[in-house]
Image (cartoon, rainbow over all chains, first blue to last red; front, side, top):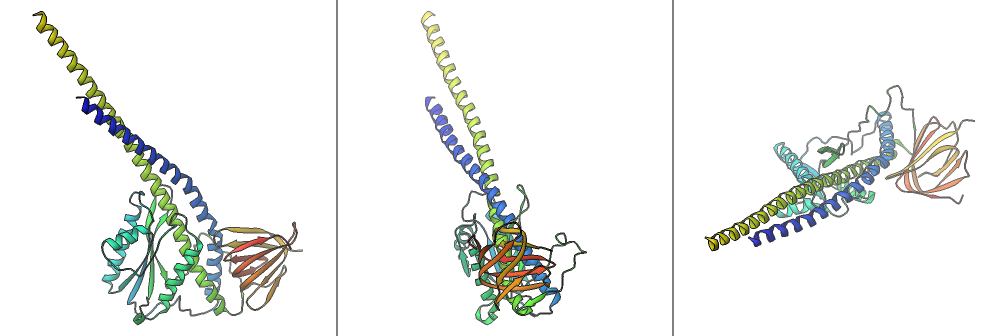
Length: 297
Length: 89
């Protein structure tokens, strides 16, 4: 009988210490989300300025750039998957990977080979465990991405894009990341990064504002040459930032749920412990009464 | 006299915005100076110093390591990969 109470006490103690950890992780994630979201906002002016400039060049100069031309046949496609480094974020990495699997399946159906690039240790673990091949992996700092990483990603991807199929090059590039819609909704999203489709968000520029006739220095081609890689940088960086914000939001929610569940468990075990204690007392009482009855009778 | 509305943005943060009388930058071809009324231009910038003469403050320079500048109807947007404000003019 006493043993049962002791077991419940141990369970309550261990669950309470776990709850403390969950609470702490939830608080950390909450405090970081604000920062991550403001970084998304801080990268917007750059993205807008670049998009505007690229649109200006593309609309005025009839320039055929290798990055914007659709290849006649797509034989191999690259897929960049953005997951997190660490777990304890609910289904965050799993849903991105699921989305990536869908995409890969789709590309295979279209008869394309797929070359995979991974971001985050979770994706690496997933691929290693299934002994699947991937071209390259970047790990570290998924919850606070640096612009340099985005540039490195772009350099590697562009190099492959420039190569021919025979040399292991790719004809199109897709990115799978988690779009941060709000604190409660984050959606795994697929975008096609290359060949580029320069689309300016209609809502951002009023339609009556006409783009002026720019003078390009040195030449439209060279301006575009300098602009497009930056445009890709900014898109990749934006994906990374949104993924980071989503990761933290997912972690916060997962930790809140875990903390709440721990609380429920503690409540349940406390009741069971009380029950056990009461049963013990009742038994002792009835033993005493029975003993006294036997003596007096 | 008209003024230039200048915005400087770096990849991950906003650097400076305000009215200015003059913007001087180093483009890949040489120096480019922009006064109010400049024709619309899109130009690639080389690494170097950017000089800005604001209306209400004293002149200052910003170090950039490449980027581009766009000018249209007195609105100047400078997009830099990395920008550091150095106050000594």
